[in-house]
Length: 280
Image (cartoon, rainbow, N blue to C red; front, top):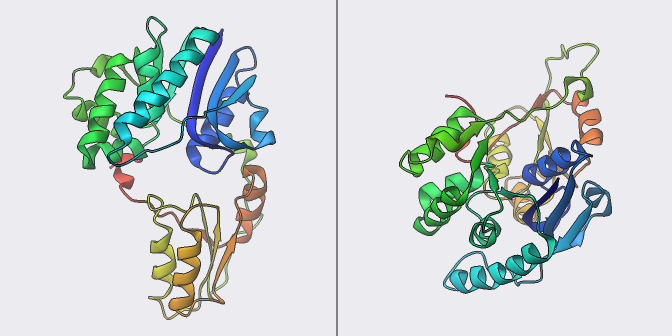
């Protein structure tokens, strides 16, 4: 079976959605998988796919040029589909331009749309994003979500017209891969905290940094990850007098990250719109 998929970002494991895609297709060795992405291409991540094709259409995801961008992307994707003729298409992020291009060019090829969360939150705030989601969902044979909460948001945003197409498949980790402490921490001093994730507005890492300045205790925070807001976060830590208490490290491969986590006292999880991602 041949599957065409893709995420319209640089092809490296820099965010949860990209890591999920990497895991999913590594676990499907009997499936021929072709992934559309963006340069640069991380060679280790590329190993999850039989073929990785960088998109050439200049990305213009927001603003007045969006319609023209989608038209150009649709032409490129349409030509690739005609050439590749996959058995199925997996549209990652149901409100993104690449998924819209898939929906306009798939013809009789079935589409399975996979919701990751941020695009659903965007559809709640923005009419253009909402319209994109509606078109992609309408073109899909199935829509997969990780939680019932996210499924209900999609169902509501699409006016419950596609309820029978929505399937909830939880995304988790193998517990055998997780690292734990041999003994729990019993110290009473300052905490060693860690935050790991893509450094963008949606992850709201700024909340973790600013919260550290509100306590009288000299807790320390390690921020692990890459993203467009790293410079701003580093500057904010300096402005708050936290230069020596907030430490920034690059994105780590998951196995290396898990091996590091037991050395911290607590994991700090911050995100915007988190009610979409976990049960109430």
